[in-house]
Length: 273
Image (cartoon, rainbow, N blue to C red; front, side, top):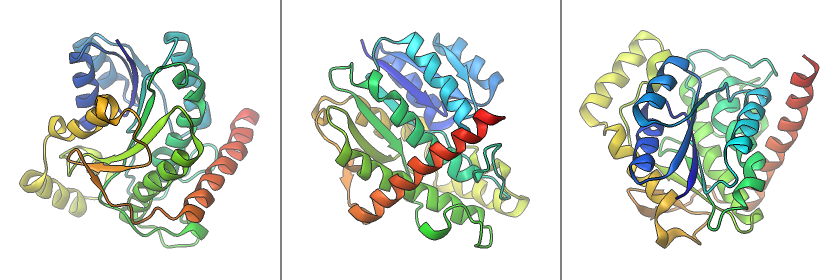
């Protein structure tokens, strides 16, 4: 029996992934922001839920402390938490919210859970990315100079997920890391958008979107399938390997270094609060 941590696990792909893992007999901890939905998931699946704001170092550290006291090893981490805010917002640590949640939380959890992951026989990390990528601008990752655009910020964050997975894959030993596109899943991530965009996305999801259960198939497969035990640094969609157009070593490492520095500086900020 294996131990798994699923972030963004109170709805959508995260919740469906947690449900599938529990159905296979695994131990799962779900992390999310919404206390009410989290308690519903915990009751439905009979698993622990931990409420945390992963956009901050304090929130991530609280999760790390909880997981370390709950598990003696961690077989898999599913980085799935995500935000799609309408307006540019910054966290209490001064980091733009989309980047902090969708990118920096992945980095922090991966780094912080490595000791526990290395205690497992075949530990894996799966980063939920997307086919919706682009608008990457390293010189202005937090939209401090660019005009704010929520879609561009989200697309950039999903490209960052891929790039950090490639960077980590070259650095890690005994721990595999891969990125997955779950498909165009009909979720509630668009709820924070303004009326026109929100309605357009809802209609699109209704016509073209797949269910959360369908979207969970590839992430769970990447976490558990025996054939992928030694596979790392890949991109998967529909349980098939996809191309990696953004796997440029220098740019990926540059982004990794940026996240390392941002993690350190923002931690100093929250520790002083």
